[in-house]
Length: 183
Length: 183
Image 1 (cartoon, rainbow over the protein chains, first blue to last red):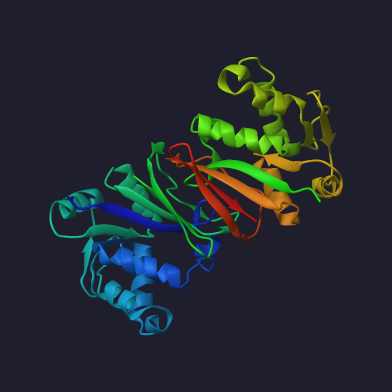
Image 2 (cartoon, rainbow over the protein chains, first blue to last red; image 1 turned 30 degrees about the vertical axis):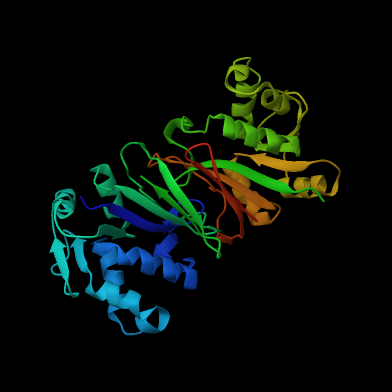
C-alpha cells in the first residue's frame, strides 16, 4: 500500500500562507534542496488543489525555474504523475497531469491500491484539510520556518473535529527550519 | 540583564487553545514536569495577560493542583513574583502579584535592568504578540502538541506583522511534544 503524505511549510504560529497568499517568508537553501531531492526520489504521484496547481504549473513550467533550483527538482516536477482536484478548472494542460473533479478521497484510495512510490500532497491547504477529514492522509511532514506571521491562513482551517497524531521524528535544519513528521 | 522568555504551548496548526478554551492536549508526563521544574528554578518573575492570569489563579490556588502537578511546581506558581498586565482588572489579590495597567513593554524593560532570575511570560497570546512587536522578548520557547484542533485561538493574536527568529535548539518532550527555542 502506498503512503500518502502532506509536505507543508508553516510559520511558528501555524500559518501556511501570510495575508494575501504571501509565501515570501519561505525559508530555503541548499540543505533544503537536498532534502526535497531526497523526498522526491520516493514519490510516484503528486496531488494538488487548484490554486497550488496553478502556481506550480506557472512556476515549474517556466524555464527560469532552472536558475533557482537544481535541474533534478525541476525535471521531477515536470515529469512526475500529477493529479489536480478541482470542480472549477476546465482542463489541466501541464504534462502528465490529470484533472479529477469529484471525490478526491476515493481517487486517493484508488491510487493507494496501485502504482508505485509515495503519494505526495504539496501545499494545497484546502485539499489537505479535506483529505485529512476523509482519513486518507497517512503522514504529515510539517516544516516550521523560524518566523511568526501573526496572520494568514491556518493549516487545516475548517477541519471539523480534533485529530491526534503520533510524532514519528523531527529534523533540524541549519537555516532554522524544523521538520516535524507525524503519523 | 535578565532574560525575558515566552513559554507557550501550541498545536500543529498554531492554536494555543482549541475551541472553548480547550487545553486537554497539554503535555502531562514526567519528562514535561522535569522540564518545567528546571525552567521554574531559573525564573524570578512570571508575567501574564488578564485572561491567563484569571485561569492561573483559579487553577493553581485550588488544592486539586497538587494532584496533577509536582508540589514544587504548585508552590512555585503560588510564591513567584507575578505581574499581571490589564487595563480592565480592578485589583489582583493572588499572592505576590502586582497589577500593571499601562506600558507593559516599559515595565518589562525596567524589570530586565533589575536583579533576579529569568522573566517568564506564560501563555497570554495577545500580550505576547504586542511584546514581540515591542522587541522586549529575548526568547521564544514553543511546545507543539501532536494534535490538530482545526480551530481555536491563534498563538500570536496581537502581533500585527511578520517577525523572524533564529532557532537555537529543538528537543522532544515525552513521547510526542516538541520544544523549539528561538531567539
